[in-house]
Length: 234
Image (cartoon, rainbow, N blue to C red):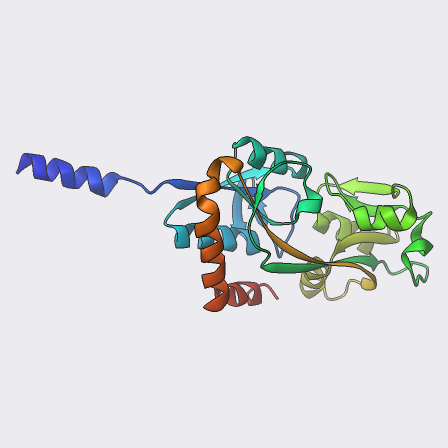
């Protein structure tokens, strides 16, 4: 009886293995909101929890700045980083299938001059996010852009609304979310830069998770979980 009870207590107190998920500190809503180092809202929080649940793992979020996110996954300090694509990371990692999409845009402030193509911005300082790469814009200019780096996309949009610069590089979803929360802000999309397909980067040390992860991604697409999750933040 004692042995059985001890066995039951041990089983009851056992916790599932963890999935260590990067919470990029430079992301803003609708993708992520942090309270200190703890994710409290956003697509990436919900998605990480959903994938971990489908894999039978317990999600543990690790808040990291953009420059450290890829190296953490490559080194095994973290297991998973989502809403990324290979061109954005200079590290050797494993990749899931693409299952998310996004659109990079140029947003303009209330006093911005008119533009019709990327080249019109060649001499303009652009609001950018520290640690982010913008290869399409760099290539269009045939030189590095004039960056005005800040910590996250929301800070850039606030600066834009205050007239501290004319243009920022951002994501269409980020601009839409900001305008929904700040309907009087006179911000607008002026150029589409790039439409991208995104997935998750997986640590090479977790290669055994790649196939189950892709199967979980298939399931959450087929059963509507991804669409429902994204709709929550529109």
